[in-house]
Length: 405
Image 1: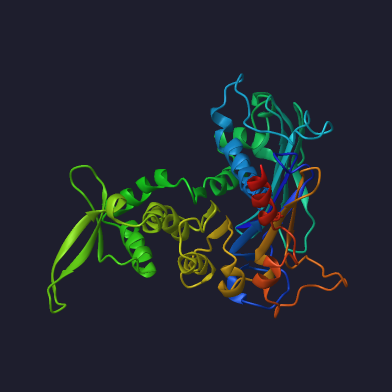
Image 2 (image 1 turned 180 degrees about the vertical axis):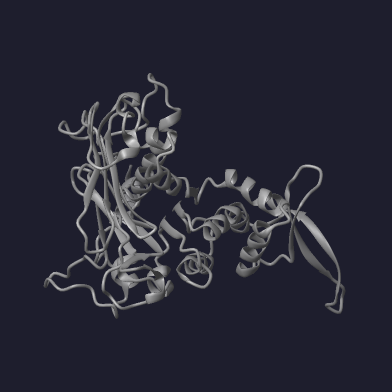
């Protein structure tokens, strides 16, 4: 499971910021926590912030890290690494971007990270912690082309085979390194989902519905659970389009037959979004993966957004301990989403356009106290109590000035 993600000098993140999925000692909603030995991690995290505050950039940072890792072995010696530093400061515009992740795999905690520019890997490191209270030890540390192996036998004699624009971990994975493979497999369980431009996701739902297997049943159960109004989901034989079936009634209200429609034509945009995402989300829930969704609430009724979040937070539904990280503007979740204070994060930009990231459980009131669990988070957030909201000018004045012009 994912315990932490840190990013620095990437897009609007000038300084290193950390998204911490380790559960704090607060007492509300204990079911929202994954417990593995003495480790406790959050099943989901919601990220709020004004437009252009950097919340999408946080997810882009996660996706960039995973893409760099997954594509490292495919990269030729002349390929560039897709990364963009913080460009609005002379101290950072030509320096490498920082990425780090902390994972718990089979009871062992791994901290892996790297610093890269478009041309090469500047630094790379891997640390291991075998017990909760034990001491962290480094497995390898890399600086440029110099790779220091401390206790990492699977990396021996592979230092010279590692290009300057390739990750050492990926090279060890190619040579069947046990630890490397275990970590790389977790990276491949991460799925990026767009809450806005989501049409490309539909192929996964179509594929799952074509299978006579548990994947098919999971998708159907997921859609039935959300009660979207149709009775059945199928695939057309000719062009493999998703079809929804609705009951046809006579004048006395009795069901006489079914009528099938091409979903993209006849269903609402919200229903189509659910259909597009169904295969992805059920695959993640069934496989215990990590879902990263930007603008989860786009085109969805607040109750549907709430239900998707609830499915990840419910240990009976999410029995394989999948995790959901999403951005949203849906403030209803702050009141009715049954989410903990440490599951609520905010992004906010300072005057020099650097993004700050902080959680509600970390936020301090003006008198230095923490936010109480009986506060109205939604009301307080809209009122600007926690920051991370847009500054809106006087529209009456703007309109008035427009008329005078």
